[in-house]
Length: 201
Ligand code: AR6
Image (cartoon, rainbow, N blue to C red; front, side):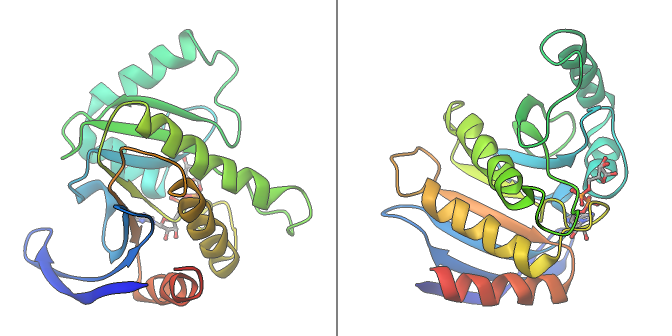
């Protein structure tokens, strides 16, 4: 059920198109156009790679705006819990450095290889494990980018269905999370997610 659609002023005066959907008894999913590294949320999710050592796209924006503290903690994770890198579909948490967030959750989405190599299940795991990790830190708001749909080549329409269905399913169970922002980088991607949201919520 859609509860709101509008434009709000945020991110240094930019107008943010948003659309809100109810996803559980208290939870709301908000689709928004913007740069995820500027979003105010308890947790910002990073579309990382297994190395956890940074990259381009969302990863680049988060590390450059968040500062060196995030990379230092990623290096510690590599030296301790994930010596061989973070596997696809898993999630790991660090502090958020200079970002307007308490934590960054780093997850690795699948590389699109045509759709028959388990990509949908791996993408679902990336969202699910990020939400589970966020909930275990008692946070209320989480911001996701459209994982895997940039450098990793996952078609946005297919990815939007996996993302929103997984979020909806997660909210069927008890959770402390009250709001999930899906932060889309273009109007085109926003509209694709909007169509999927109308279908699932
Ligand atoms: N805010 C919100 N969305 C963004 C931003 C931003 N600042 N920048 C890009 N997007 P990608 P992936 C959109 O490539 O496909 C990195 O090098 C983008 O338009 O960031 O999971 C990592 O280190 C696209 O729709 O992530 C990995 O090596 C979506 O976010 C690899 O890319 C995801 O694009 C991960 O690839």
